[in-house]
Amino acid sequence: MVKNKSIPIFEEGEFPLIQPIDLDGFRAHNRKKTKALIDKRMTEKEAIEKFVKDGDYIGFELYGTVRCPMSLTRELVRSGKKDFRIVGQGVHELDLMFAANQVKEIDFTYISLEVYGISDNMRRRVESGDVTKIVEWSNAAITWRFKAASMGVPFIATRNMLGTDTLKKSSAKVIECPFTHQKIALLPALIVDTGFIHVNRADIHGNCQIDGISGFAFEMSRACKNLIISTEEIVDTKEIRKHPDRTIIPYYLVDAVIHAPYGSWPGEMSGMYERDEPHYKMFVDMQKTKESMDEYMQEWVYGLPDHKALLDKVGKKRLQDLTL
Amino acid sequence: MTQKYSPSELLICLASRVMEDGTTAFIGTGIPMLAASLAQAMHAPNLVPIFEFGGTGAILEKLPLAVGDMRTYNKALAASGICDVMETAQRGFVEFGFLGGAQIDKYGNLNSTVIGDHAHPKVRLPGSGGANDVGSSCWRTIAIMIHDKRRFMEKIDFVTTPGYLTGPGAREEAGLPENTGPYRVVTNLCVMGYDDVSKQMKLLSLNPGVTIEQVIENTGFKLLLADKITENTPPTDEELRILRKEVDPDGLYR
Image (cartoon, rainbow over all chains, first blue to last red; front, side):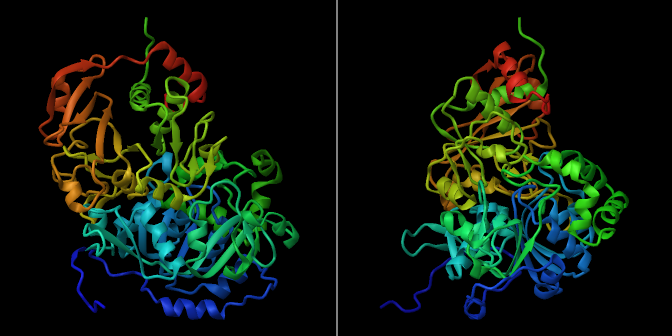
């Protein structure tokens, strides 16, 4: 049997891991999580108080403004907790966190306002140095890093990112594949301290169903030590059991279930409601300067005690108009 | 007589014509979405658009505003997730991929990460997103760009997405899949391809009213010229009708 025959490393990304890989710690943590079908409902505030602390590595699952856990994001901003290390696929949620200066380090893949251009909140925090470390990845790379964690292994191999500065400014390593003898990039597993995912429906135990495309919910939900779910609807477990093939996230992964109708507002929710385009355009305008962004934060985040107050402020009529 | 058209309408039509029927194309936000939708209505009814968050084979009746919105899986063949579509590309199922960026060099390498130094950026850009994956895995990539010297540069500030890297053989040497790479660059001035041997960008055809000198003047590196440079057909009445009535009735990209 071959023992310690060294594999050449051709290249290494220059950054150490923002989140070290502790697979046995992850297994031990997962062993301790309850497997009982208990009621996990709580409020946004209770969940964040219980599962998030300063300096944690946190992750949001969403795509663009679709299925964003916005009620949780606003509560996270109001909590005043800070110095987060985050994994970025950010469109609206990270804007609020940048405005509140809660982000210290980023595993960065894409942060922008899509068709509306570059995020000025992101630019202000990154270009001023408030964000102290930025490590680059591609979208697939981040998702495969979750997949490695989900598999319980330390890395996953890919042919993407090779030959680029994206790899140079990452924490990936390029080795000679011991099977094919070609160069291959190794992506380190990414285990998130606390993850936030918004879903179409869940039961009180945290069995979650997502309609339409599922982005990276499957992979990220399995890569989180703590997983906080917000859901449009709470349904009876009998409903979940009718269509078990639709369950993307089984209950044992989940630590908290928050009932948050219109939880993705001003973003959208597959089959349920559309993006609030007038509000979003107003936000796009207001995020251009720090002063107007502060006003936005005061009016739409700090000035409201909870998600219910936000929905009251948006108004029934407006929400009905957005509903499909 | 041909109607008047806007610069974006011309870009959309040119990009649409590059797409072939009966194959797969990875579609990003903006112009590629309109181009794919127009191609489906014109010459490529069986073009299968693939969106990075899991939509495969949508019928693009309404213009998606983002790569994850509901319209990216409207009447689609499959709605999965990011792993599935990215892995599909990595194992060779995706023919075309569309890209954009703030800067491009003569080998088609693209920058969408940062202007200036990475540690102390002058402008922090949105980052790779799926761009690096598309540029690594798709067989043929098409870049859509505004043509000026600040974007077409000898040396770009950051290689987010691989083109031909440093020249012939460099992709394979880096470990990228063989026979992949940049195929076309569509701009407001012209359409370019790449020289088979040197892998450098080469002018193929000019947009109506544009001269070779004008293209050279707006390119920050030495551009190769095809033996015969043709003129691109302006958007036809039929293309403009479909674009304005069906693809983009709200005129978001006019």
